[in-house]
Length: 279
Length: 156
Image (cartoon, rainbow over all chains, first blue to last red; front, side, top):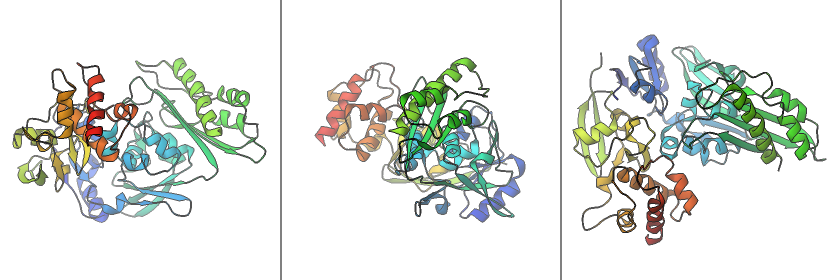
């Protein structure tokens, strides 16, 4: 399968890239690792007139993990996230597709693509992280909560580039990541990110639960979080909280999983992820 | 629109340069422009791994990469792994342990395995299976492939 024709540039600087995007107009697309975009182009589901390849922008490949805040350039690959010792983010990145895909796919690319079935959006949501977006008029930071607007639609606007991903290290939190799919390379039918902070008396001081593929955007399982906060971290209280994990969700059904089955998966995976995060 | 781009890359130690369409995939550059047909096109959808080559030392799927993205890179294909009479330890091990039947997936299996052994020279069986999750074989059931990779890791 061959993509439709397009023009291609690989700028040397972010300013040049923004300029190229502006000149390319609405049919210009940014190319990061290409592992979502190129398959779509081969299927002719995406036909950009211009690709602006960010591969030469070394600043976008930097990793900074000082002061409890992790800052990853948008072009940092899933492999580097998986092996970077970043807790939940690393655990989730290690499950993305396969090694070859993790060697090319990037954290900025997957977040800007905004596929609700992909792993990192709900992880960033649970971590209460953010992204930096650069446009011709400057830079802005957008919280994960405001980034994902709809299926494959994010707050990254036309002519803008997602440049950096930020999230706190969350010392003192345990984490768990559970994904259910039929084959290792597949997208998640459902995945659950859990972060748990245990108080000195063994109760749950804080909990955050991110849901993947339970809606057109990544979601927080707020009812389950509320049910567990302040409770002892016992198998019973975790199971009871997890039973609320699918409340209020309208997951997209597909050939693999009906809505009811996805809600079932969300409850089971939440219980497992919370259990791991509480250990 | 759609002019051409000049790409220059080192392929198996030799510098190669060509004027190509931006939409040319790396796998077609290797097979058709350079005549290196050891890299196979299997599924053409980044699932099967038959097209696996190394880009700057890391295994990637060349059906999901534009040749233009590899400009300036070092590429290694199965042809760069060993020669007749002086096979790479992985090639020896796949032969010795019969890690193939039809052989279509074998170049990709070897390139993915080489990436694993570079990162983890002494993997256990589970790590081998995990590292080859992106490579499909429809003949062997994987047992002899895994045996071959483990044998190569012990031989090196």
